[in-house]
Image (cartoon, rainbow, N blue to C red; front, side):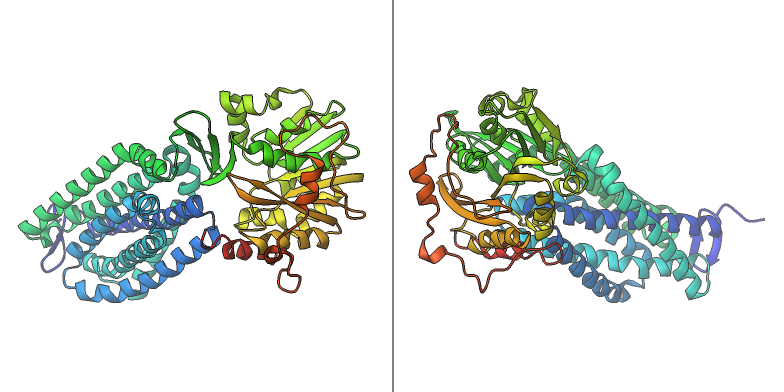
Length: 525
């Protein structure tokens, strides 16, 4: 027979039997590990949302956190004399920093242009606190019931790894869809605080002084209150931070499964702009310059069946449908949210002339690379109107392999046109696109025009035969910007932006050089 408290060693009394106490400690390990992995993934995700460079952001977060975890493990030696209090304080700090991390990073990016230092600092602090957990938990487990160190380590790591699995799966499939990134991190922080501190307050309360017990209780309440307050105001914070990134008032903002979509409108209503992950897609003031230059040179010759890769705003389709003999337009765009917005927003749908309502248009929402691998149809014209290849997700759309798939989808005498970024601001990236096209067997004609909202912008017209002439179709509609004289001038590049064959190379799936070329561009602008 035993009384209501179970003795495990002199000075340590537990409210439950040792077996149950070990279970609750391991449960805390499980929950805290899941929370720690969510913090890690949240840091990577916010970086990919704001900067689009997933590999770099993941590398920074993972390397800094692993290093900091090692430092934390060593630092934990200083706190072994009072492991229960130390563990509770660490979990409280971890839940506060981890829960607020997304909002802190967004604020650093929007208002202080200090995203990278903030990312490194938060990664280090979170990693440091996570690294201190296991050694302290090892001590607590041993205080409950003495056992071989190898057995204790096996139990702790098993709970830790399984918790990591659950946290890793819950992040993309549960937290992001239901709560979004900021609120998801805050909710996990609150869970981390409640579980991590409550275990100490309940199981190890006999080891705590009255001051320590009161301090931890008040601290837990304060942390949960701060996280709850941040949760309530998270949406407003996100709106304010997002608005700080844009010149004009935001009239629409949403985060789709793939990207952040923002529409702004100037105070006079004349300039409506769409941004995807912060990158400008068009301005109503001058989008016609871009889309006329993109579409009409490719429409010379047969254009009965047209394929548009990207272009979910419907503006390239508007130019294509101006030709009466176009029989079908297939648009392949990854994000259905962009197409939905372009179809329903009054300003954008009017701008694209309601192009998605035309019965000749078929929309396929999928990855263009994968779609081309299974496509069996041939097209007279292919228009590649996709975001610049600045990260892993988009760089494959400017690779030799991708253009080889495009070539397989082209009929005889068909033309391909590619938007290729700015030959002035990112010349290496621009000329690399040309090399990639040539690597896939295309002959190219490069040209560039000025689009004030973008700056100097470049394109490639390509065929699988001889280099195509740059012309306007005889049956072209009345154009506001493009004419024969402009196209002749568009083929001239200034001496300081002409191709340097010896330095710029093609981009492939295994060597996505275009990412580095884009990183090297736009400096000083």
